[in-house]
Length: 278
Image (cartoon, rainbow, N blue to C red; front, side, top):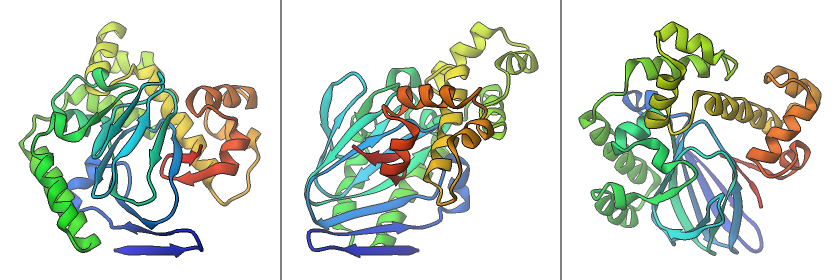
């Protein structure tokens, strides 16, 4: 467990990180994080698309979320389907949560819903998983980061063990796109599986939420966003080339669509964890 504590004249907050247990690692895109602001001002973040499904389990005040279509809703603990445009997240002066990034296939397994129904949408967690109400209550009562991570990890492990596994063909395609950083040919995927393009698209929309082509674009965008967050100084043209874009203009267009800003502005405003200052 690593906890980073920070304090200024106007705010105080903590960021906790703990490596997940081995059994959960195939279902997660990264290390779970805990965030808590004990004192401060209201927060507004622009969450940009990632090749996964955010799961936020709160133990503080509710969040106000504005989806890419401009619809604003208030949520406590929530899941957001695959996004193809930025969403705004607003928090109060105090808040706390455990933040996880599930793979789309893990989210499909967890929810048992067609994932395209959640694309560019956010849903209250206990609306789709009634047992989450008890999890929320116990998180509010927990007195340490260790207890909070234990509660969330046990909840996920229990749900995932009981759920049906994804289609092996879609799972292979997902892993192949990730291994190739979104640069695998969609025609190659269909040929390897012996599927038509129509069948491949239908299965992806059901179990991941977007088409293979859109998923590949999000993977490339996420890789470019990670490069821009890195402390290593690299030019935009070099990042564009390494991430599979035709040129820097192509990179700029993708950032306009997925992040609502330019790569240079994204680099200046990044906060990590998929978010930039709005």
